[in-house]
Length: 278
Image (cartoon, rainbow, N blue to C red):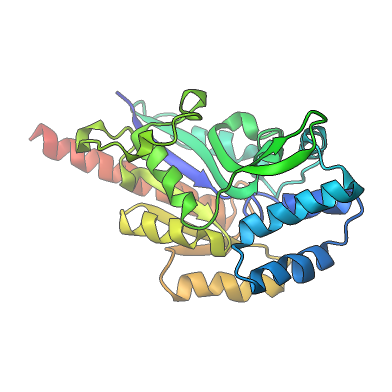
């Protein structure tokens, strides 16, 4: 049986610029007003940030902007990724190609819109993608949040990965993740998980992965100084083990960090096997 290492990504501002913002801009919505005024007004009333933005999107759609399933899928084709993202999967798999008992799997856990994420040109590389989804009416227009992934919700899907509850057959089995598993039943040991994220909604995953002796890595947009302070807080508060720019090119600091993280887990696996063999 192969030893699986799970590399788990947030999406927006981790692999690409914010896909919801770019979608709203594409249909003529002023995103400064949307985020800083309209969504913020709901936050001031006690709303959670994720259902707040989903609700405002539904309002915009009802008011004539017609946000549809087809719009999401079309917009997915226009997502521009950070440098090196499209090649990172092959690069990392090549890094472990001579380790016959090691297999890499890639996942996304995001508070973004699932129908965008699942239709990008890199979606084929992910074993599973968890994100927010809408219910649609007969005209395929958004009408209600079907699934919300926010803050600690994200940690739920780390357990899906660890327990092997991934793929289409588990989409309609939300309670399976609560079943008790014996230690030897976990498909991906928790310390075989690498999590890469950028923002406040990733903090629960950063903390849980670190607690479970996995490897949390924070990234930041090198061209957006406004977010550097937030990124630095993750390191200063001991949320993550490394902080690097979101540049996935072959010899970047981030790719080197990912390779070192993978090598570190492989060493744990090899040491464990030696102990087991006596």
